[in-house]
Length: 98
Image (cartoon, rainbow, N blue to C red; front, side, top):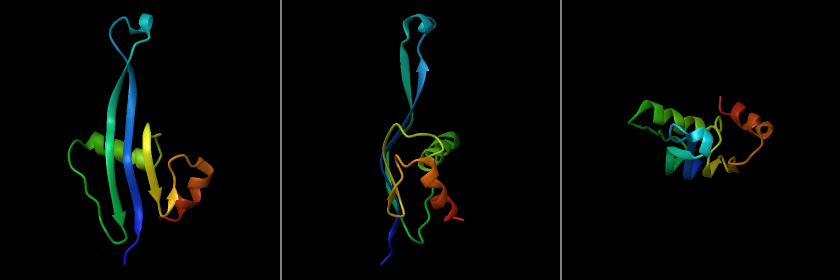
């Protein structure tokens, strides 16, 4: 039986952008979804592929690796919920992936 090494649940990453020409006066913002509700799991010895816009795939990878913070959702790597884990605790997990 293979174990689940990565589980991503309802992952979202939104970027903020000021809206309109007079946005500096009104402080109105738009939220642009880069990752919107992605869920999947990956078991040992499996490979995951993605297709579509390369920039979107890059946003997915950067958010899952916690190089950019997720807006919401959950990321579990090798049994550790890394969603809100401090950077110092992520280093040993990342080092073990080499």
